Length: 105
Image (cartoon, rainbow, N blue to C red; front, side, top):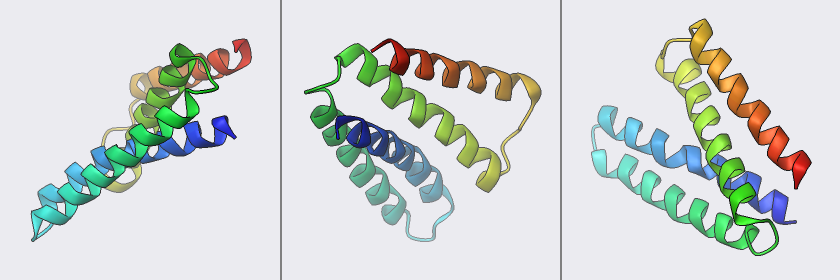
């Protein structure tokens, strides 16, 4: 169950960055900021719960990896960010590192 919480926390980790991005384009900026704050708080709580069972080093790497790569993909698919080779290659290295951390724990 801890891995479920950790993955869910990583997904909410994406939410705060996306919320801040949305606040730049929303007519009422506070909604994007509130999304960001809610996502950040929930993300950190889920990391807290997950790291009771999972080693903190492993949990943090997986949590930030999901947030970083997920936010990169959200930027590419929804905000027109660049999908250049080196960006995607670097993201693939992060994913490989996260998989390595999971397999070694």
